[in-house]
Image 1 (cartoon, rainbow, N blue to C red):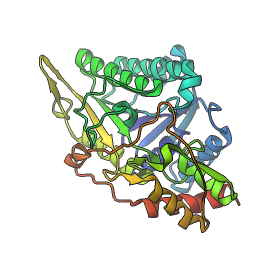
Image 2 (image 1 turned 30 degrees about the vertical axis):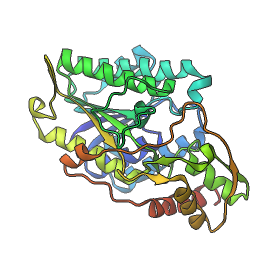
Image 3 (image 1 turned 60 degrees about the vertical axis):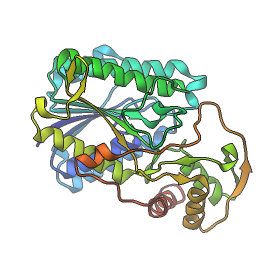
Length: 341
């Protein structure tokens, strides 16, 4: 059993990850500031579900939640003083590409300052491995596809992407200077039950079931490497267990001229981009209703296509399994039971 800190544990990915790690026998300490970027009720309901899950597994003694703002340096220092962690999985962040256009300070406070506070805690408490959420958005408008971890990502097209790129740079520095093993997780359009209301699949499902029009950007000429939440969680756990089983000096060494550091970046995607039309059709089938479509031009900060090269993920024995039609059906079933019940 390992003691694992999950930041953003009331968030979509953090909630599912906490459940999976508890089921595997680990001790989980979750932190979240429960902000109102979207309706906090969903976050509180995830926490209630986690409590019920832990009690059903008879492992409530292995799960602790702490409300905490990671931009508060003193508060973050206190969590590292009160607990000793084997692994830290930093998922907390201000999410959303378009929201960053109008609310830039929220991204710097959470995604840069909060990140720095957590990685500093890991450095001083000698955490054995620091995993953190990056994003496929760092690839920007790269024309070469599929996106590879070795591609140049120096030209982000949103502030959100820029903050995620900065996280990767800070992690590299800490790996190099302090021999802190780090793994950046570039998530590709994660979807599934308990997902975020600001995501397209959630908005589309809501609008279709309410017989309202859905906005389709770039005239529908978009592709996304949609990745089902179960695949994302299995990918993270594969990396966590690989790090636990490996000595730090042998774990995924990333070498550059003059630099040898326990540092790695992973694409966590499906490796199979889906057209917007197929995506909408899957929602229509799952809802049993046709969408009313409002065709619009491309949004600022958005990209036409994402496509993950997942060969590095396959190196540790993991391949995503879930097709879009099944994943969307699972989400719509959850949506009906949670929102419409």
